[in-house]
Length: 177
Ligand code: GDP
Ligand code: MG
Image (tube, rainbow, N blue to C red; front, side, top):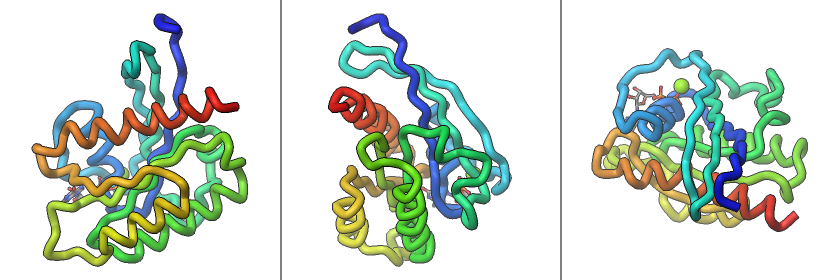
């Protein structure tokens, strides 16, 4: 129903330094900001239209959640989760698996919308995580998977697609239930 305002609570999760802030700010401003304070946590508001329906997004760009993703109630607050690792950092990939497992222990998979992102694909020479591993993990998680670069200006449309597809995913989940 067009004209209805749908609220979406999105959480961007992943290890420190993988580019969560860079991706979020790229989406919101189209700009790449090189350095953010690693412990800075921000909630942004943004609107997007999908299939003639307007969505009002709250995007929580998390920080310092390595040890406990349940801290501060982020996971109970959120409905749509973007899991980010860096293709140049194997341990960040392993951390996504852990975060996913932890999240599933708290939330029913029926109501959780997820999307997996391998960031920094401009740094191909430093790759530690093969694309195929990302594909397999996404299959396991039952979600979409993208490799992307927050840095590469050519990929701004792709970055926007990540956020919008996660909203779409959540909308579809809500329609199912
Ligand atoms: P966060 O801790 O996950 O929020 O990571 P940041 O967004 O703060 O990024 C960490 C570092 O990685 C910064 O120095 C960024 O400039 C850099 N960075 C983020 N995304 C990319 C990317 O796609 N490519 C490259 N080469 N560097 C990136
Ligand atoms: Mg950050």
